[in-house]
Image (cartoon, rainbow, N blue to C red; front, side, top):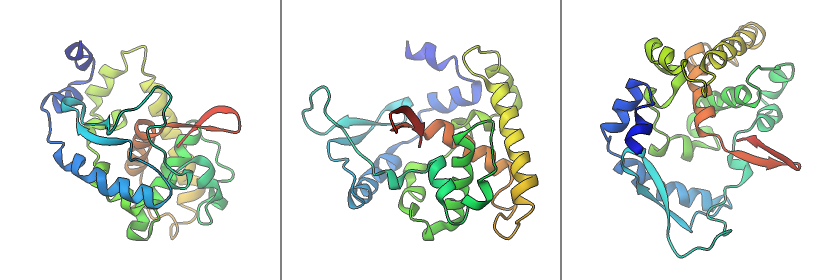
Length: 220
């Protein structure tokens, strides 16, 4: 069954998965990251990282658990959300008129690029500099070669064409109305189209939905 699932992926992604890249570095990077999360008020003590073979890094229970037990918690302050982007002293004023086609994900992408630009000065530096945060092109369909994207677009389950066009439209609005108007705040070396697409791909693939205000949830 797993073999059949993998064969639905584009060749670049399938080759990367079936080549079984070493995950030991990522697994070893989890405990320090978990300690940082705990120091910020979270709790990751119930689970531990494990090598999930072709699937990368997984989590297994570190002790006996029951259905309904909370396995881990991460403070909201350690998440990047559209709301946190709009509340940002640096970004908020520039994004207040932004109405992206990709909604929260485009706000998150801009905020992620800003945090990466801050480097060690970012409050999220322990996470962004962790080996857990390794990113390869095969991880992000928005960065796949055109032939692989064309194959993916044949799927009825993946709105690849619409998403790519929406991403390009969102970037163009940002470029014309924000980035070019304030190059000292948004240097092209950081906020390029390629960087924005990578950050969007990360947002789509890494975000989870966090319940907010009684609603089903918002990506974070």
